[in-house]
Length: 86
Figure 1 (tube, rainbow, N blue to C red):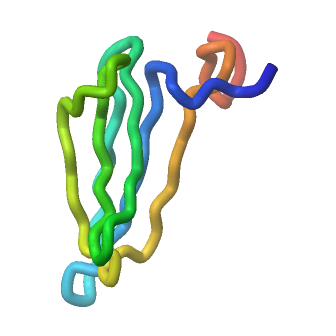
Figure 2: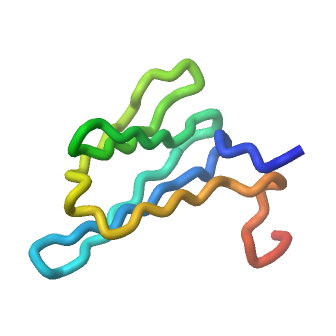
């Protein structure tokens, strides 16, 4: 059994070039049962928090030419922090 990426705690960090200065944005799944999905469409990257049924709650769009890094952080299987139990 692997890590379930569709649990509460999913988050995506996006680092963009904002005219020479990098800016970091974070999209989180804020409630149990929600997940964060990333979609690439032409020159845009769309990051959405969606419910179990697939209804988008929040969406952020970024120009793909401005993205320096996109990091997905899935929730761990046991619901523990990476530092250990607790």
